[in-house]
Length: 304
Image 1 (cartoon, rainbow, N blue to C red):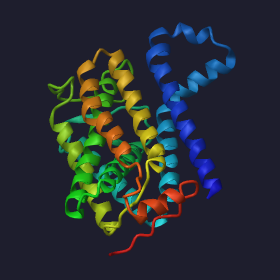
Image 2 (image 1 turned 90 degrees about the horizontal axis):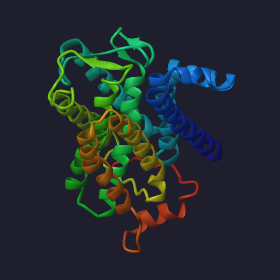
Image 3 (image 1 turned 60 degrees about the vertical axis):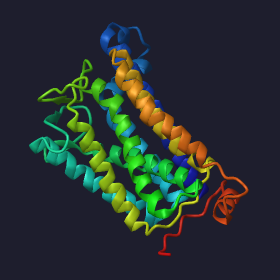
Image 4 (image 1 turned 45 degrees about the vertical axis):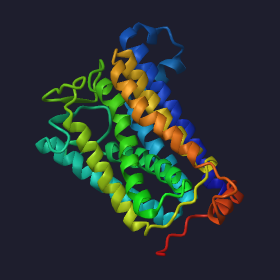
């Protein structure tokens, strides 16, 4: 498990470094291409690589990092029970959306995010749904579980909150990434929300709710028992990706999407992470989790 932890941390650092390179490239280098000529050879190579494949690299590294994290704290079965539905359902939604306009609206992907499945959706897109979806769901569900909410309320609420955290990321990402100097996708019929149709948010919420519901059923209602320290990784992934989209939107002058994203995404995520802190009255499940925080045992999923 130590090797898994090291690989997980390595991929997380690479993911964040790629995000930073992407910001520098999109906000500094592209508007001032002459800056590349003033860089040393290694700097020129790094920036050229970043422009050519940085988007693909940061998504792949993020997906690998979260996959290793999920394997380490949940186990192989629960990890696959979330990843397979999230990738399959999000890819289906994206293929449907780029073909028909439902459920997100009429849009199309451009170059820069890798090979396109069926010539429509970059293969990296469902990977981003997976890794942001999983950390959003784990934060939401663990925070609610620690508050001892009854299952009939906690599980639907975790699905709704997880989907909301995921959608909040798109509040800040979509306006900037579709209207930057080198857009990664475009809206065929621009909407009223900074170029996006409001339908897009319903599509994001709906897609997230569907695959999180499937994962919840496959996990057979087992409590996760994750502690705040075990959720640190998930929060870092969520906040770093939100920061990337937020900085891009602020640079483009889109203040409202960032404020909305902070209100319904960042604030609830931090509050739920804080709520997951174990206490003496939280029961044996959390106490056992607290004792194994250094190298936690995989989650054993079984019906109760």
